[in-house]
Amino acid sequence: MSVFTDLDHHTRADLDLILTDVLSSVLAEEAIATHNQLPQGPLAVARLAIHDQLDHGYAIVEVRAGVSLARVIAARMMSVASPDLDDIADAIAELGNIAGGNVKTLLCLHARMSLPISEITEQAPFADPEPQDGGAYVRAMVLGHVAQLAIRPDAAIDGLVWPPFTPDEMLETSP
Amino acid sequence: MKILIADDSKAMRMIVVRTMRQAGLEGHKIIEAEDGKQALKLAQEEKPDLILSDWNMPEMTGIEFLRALRGTGSTTPFCFVTSEGSEEMRTMAEQAGALGLIAKPFTPELFADTLSQVVSA
Image (cartoon, rainbow over the protein chains, first blue to last red):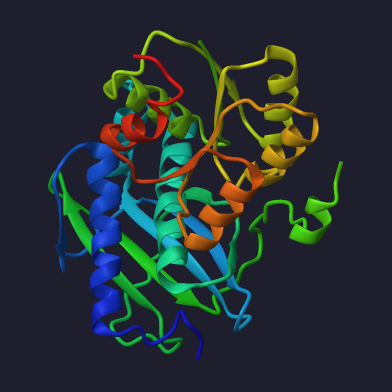
């Protein structure tokens, strides 16, 4: 049990709001919460970890979207007509970063967040309606496409990179 | 006016530039850095008039960048543009000498409100 598990109805509504706000902001299009499924085929995935330093719990925050939507997101974010794979990876990672930062602010009082990583994958999305780890996911529709924001407590954090950490007391005595 | 934008995401650096334009804060020379370490170097070499920086970055975080910059005696206006907008971070930013913290997702209006005191249209 941690701040990331067994989220109540109100918190899930806040997650809905985070996902729709993030999508609306980067795309300048209306996004609405939905229960529709993610598209079949390859998905662009952004993943980062949050470490709650009060209860020492970890969670993976993951944003998924079909490659078609991810391409549109990259094109809008970077003002290019034909984003390449690096652009798509960068854009979906930043989308995950924004969503993750908002999740951290929503759920944690004192926490650290890893840097986001991204990939294009065919791996099945996290979509268990009653996940064993107490996690949760919400979905939103924008431009006719579905995107998903998931919180996965205790998921593996291998491969994630954490920003440098310097305790405040050390920084404050630096010249 | 010269503005340094530090963010490890190219997409976000472009969004920041575009949002400044939408906020009516355009026509300025933009220089970019991919992490805090590079940003600190550029800040010392280029002497920007304003710095907009992400918080979570590789090599050196935004708050470390700000503290190191202030440690050199620089008083360049510095504003965070970051995905995390907790009260804890806002307090840390203010105590370290930032003029504000703009949390993502943001609007052109928020940019204008926060930066109008240091950026001319």
